[in-house]
Image (cartoon, rainbow, N blue to C red):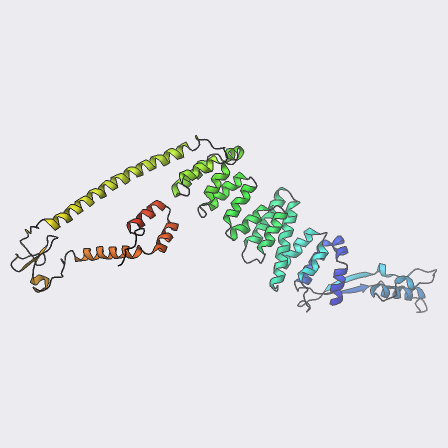
Length: 446
């Protein structure tokens, strides 16, 4: 079996040149462990019988020649045995014999299957047969990871190499096979090899697919913009934009980079501006700075964007002013009520207990919240002074808890910075934490 493999590799180039289909199948069988050796039977026509029963010398010489042709003995060839001239008819030689191959039934022969890489050099000038060989080998179940990597990487390279020399339908078919090959997660092809081979063969779909699997969406968009492929950039923006919002500011800068690209983008600029405005991805001033950096965009293009932002800001300012006036009115009313409670006597006109509902009789307890109770309904004695209205006790406890939380959060500057970094409205966040007292001066303890 070792001698058979050595002969196969020795004459592989010649065999592939003359009988490519049969030789490729022989390689497939041998490298997938399915090789079954065949037996050759040589049929030599019978020589005419001599009248005296003695074979002529020429026939014996031919037998030696046949044996020499079949057994490659050292220092021996068919020309070393010469038959003497004969006047009679010449006997049959090896060239006139028939060789009959017979297949051996049963399981394949037992041998050590060589690594697939050892056969690659035999297919140098036969890419079509090489692809058939690789496609058959990858289906084998007895492959280790290193052999799988070699086979799949080489097959991917051959697909790209074949697609670069084909046109139309054949090229598309090979490219689809290449994309299907790297699109399966179970196939062990290194991402760096895919990127390298895709760049060498100008196969952009391969580079995009690898970057997409690794989550490099921004790099995919940048690859289109660097190639000035506006239609591809628009497709990438629509596909990856919802998951990668920062693509929209980059798309706005690209679409307004040159007059040609802006003409190709068309109405997509308005879509990008609308998305930026709706999600608050950029402040209006940042949008203006981006559009004015190249001197391509005009005021007419962003007139709708500016008018919408200005109208929204006006409405928000008006709502804030009404809200401020409401807070001021409520604050003044509360301050007046607190002042009257501290300077004027309170008049209690309740006639029934707020707990049991019966008419009030002495001893009676009145609270400044205008609730009155029987003393026995509050379960208190005459010495108890620290007591609050049971009806408003829950609300008062909530207010005290909120106040305590505000006092504690005022010292947690790390929480303020974290909320500010995650906020989309920085000013609102600063205002909220300012109300909590995070920016107030710490009390001085004497």
